[in-house]
Length: 306
Image (cartoon, rainbow, N blue to C red; front, top):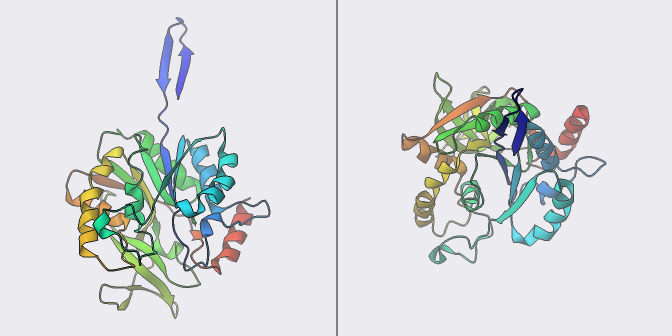
């Protein structure tokens, strides 16, 4: 977006405003929710959770939205969002399909998408600017969008200077079952050094516990810094994923539920020593929908904010 202004001497000065892009992970199947939660409504006016993220993102200065969806619900999804966003922001759709892998790895028995890391790789042909990526079913808060938008606007798109919005674990758990979170290690300067995808974190008899690699449920500090998949990247991030994904496919042939998670790519970035990830802390309390029983609470929280 270009603005033109005149100085007192009537010289024209051109000021370029960098508008980042928002990528929304919306190709999930909602198996624990019991349906396509990315299109479920949470207000009498028919708002989805995505609508609130879109509103906050546009107010924060994002200029384009990339939806990652599946072709099976393309028409229904576009019917909801195209009209709402017309004239407000550029909209692009990309598709995450099971067959978006080399032919030798296609398994007709697989029904589960390949994961958030695979979804990110689907966007590399439509993104040339700095961007943030979020889940479709999580409410992140306006403060979080403002923080990451500012970070992205002030980052050279040719750099390996990445970022993320982080939350305290205690603010991100469901009362209705287990959740998946990225457990983060942050250094004294506020930069990420490691992130581990914890696929099962659950409150058991009042204590938060996390499943380790051996299937054991062990206590985890409620103040642990976690990722909610709110990352800020430059286009340079796409240098790291393709080879890693091919290795993943080779190692997980025949595993119908194996997923290529975004934190796997982030750790590859960090291991390269080329990239850094600035951690932007948020004190906001998460709400979203992992289970159908989460919906009532989400509706109440939204109503408080309206």
